[in-house]
Every structure is written in C-alpha cells, then in structure tokens.
Length: 118
Image 1 (tube, rainbow, N blue to C red):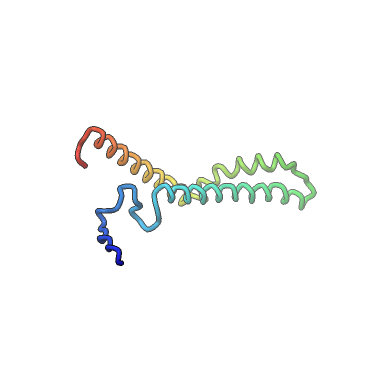
Image 2: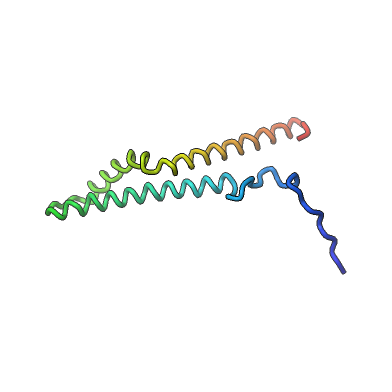
C-alpha cells in the first residue's frame, strides 16, 4: 500500500510568518543579539569591578565591594556605547525588523477582518 506523495511546495506556499533568511526569524535574531549585547555589557562590568577592587590592593588600599560595583556600573554605561557599537546597532536593526514584521502582520489581519482578499 503506497501513500500518495505530497505535491512539491514552492516559495509561495510558505506561511507569512516564516523566516525569510537562513539566520532565523526576526524575533530569534533579536533574542540572540540582545543576549550577546547584555552578556558583553555584564562582562564589562565584571572586568571593571575586578580592576577597581584588585588594582588598588597592589598599593595597599582596600576598596569596598559595593563601591567597586557602583563605580564599575557607572564607568561601563558610557564605555559600552563605544566598545559595543556593532552589537548595539545589530540590536537596533533587529528591533526594526521585528517591528516591521509586526506592522505587516497587523495590516494583514486588519485587511482580512475588513474582508479584503489578500
């Protein structure tokens, strides 16, 4: 007993929310980009905090942990804008892609609700 073969699917048969590139859906790319940017910024804070806490110990000065952490965060905020420009721009582009996809999906839904053929 043989099963009928399914007809070949062409590019027009793909669902509207299917990813258009090999790198995945816009939401997936946004999550990965945002995770990378967040990890880079947190890593910078950790490195700066370690420098602030342990570098003064070379000369015999003890810096409290909370002071080191606060200064690390304050220094890392503007520094990350310059050090991680590429990651930040990628996150911004991915946000724009997700917004465009959401806008298109909403326009499609509204046209179907109005009864327009799409």
